[in-house]
Amino acid sequence: MRRVILSVDETVLRAVRLYAAERSSTVNALVREFLTGLANREDRTRKARQRIMELSGRSGANIGSRSWTREELHGGAS
Image (tube, rainbow, N blue to C red; front, side, top):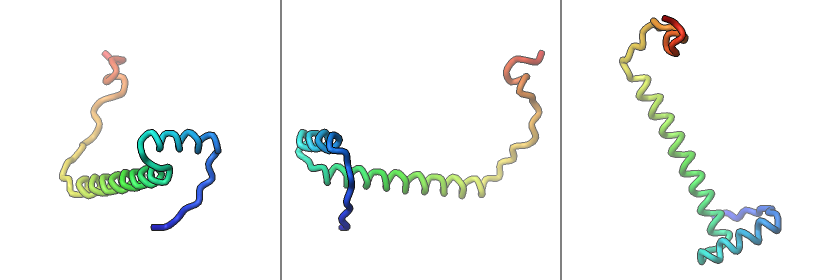
């Protein structure tokens, strides 16, 4: 595991230390959990986008031409 040095405002650090202590944790553990969650969410998002692109590429759907106007959709035309 690699070490990282962060600069944090003293007021923020005090509040986070209290938050961690109330949860029987450490600031280090909280930061590690946050960064791990962030990386996992980004990975899932990237994979989901990739899957959507794969599926849309294989789709045989034909959207066709637009046969309506914005006014018709929003009740502006009679």
